Image 1 (cartoon, rainbow, N blue to C red):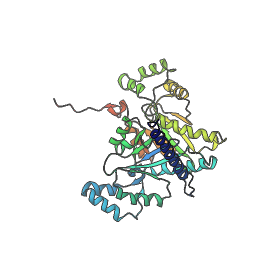
Image 2: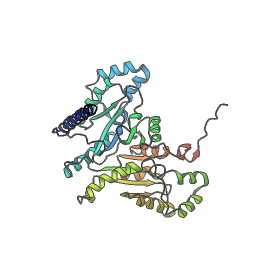
Image 3: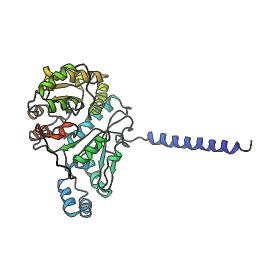
Image 4: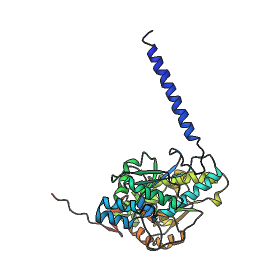
Length: 361
């Protein structure tokens, strides 16, 4: 019997510590504040943005490249009270926060919201200027990850990231390889007037929402074989691409508005902008979305026509495509675009195979 008593005491002590922890957690969770608190990560749609997508840091980056990290950090500290100008992801982030405001009005206690995380390899000392800039623009960004020169990609899963946006292609590729939706953002050549009341997101289809399985056939065998293939497999859903999960997350939040009879006034609108032809290869795309239980608000089949002029009319806060010539065309006409470096399209430029350098023996 004497051997059992210490175990009982240990068990009692563990229970008391667990109760203390639960009480402390409950106290923190119930703290009241006028400032909107970030949602719990397990319920949120988490968007991780780099500091150079959220803000324009071209001049600061040049100091880093020309004069080194010490001069760069010193410059940022010296100018920490000067707000940074906005970058390509800024309108997107503002639109996400507008959606959050609408959701909080409809569901005051809901944790199903967008959560923005600043994911940067900046030094912690630079954080003061970033915080001051965020507060200057009235953004609600409470979660930061500053890795002091190391790649932040390893932290994306820990932050339960649904989408990662960066200006560095290598980091984006690393994130996609880790199974996280990601894209490289580009600043458009001209500014466009974007909606203040509705988040507008445009997606390419193949190698973005869907896998590149059909695009491989186009590249290797031509359009006629592709059309025959898509007709033959019209009722077989395409495999998912790297951005499918982000569309799924958007759909989850859209349905919260639909449940309150707000479909016609929903602050989220999605677009499929694809080079596919509707009659020849469009049915498989629409049936794939249906099989996933996902809706797209507008489906635009361009049959190979340029996407830029149409995107000018849509005016999305962000447009995702896997091919750089579509990104460049959209950027020229003022669309904020993000490149998804995935699939066979990365081996081609404007339809021509990129010759890879021969490996040294």
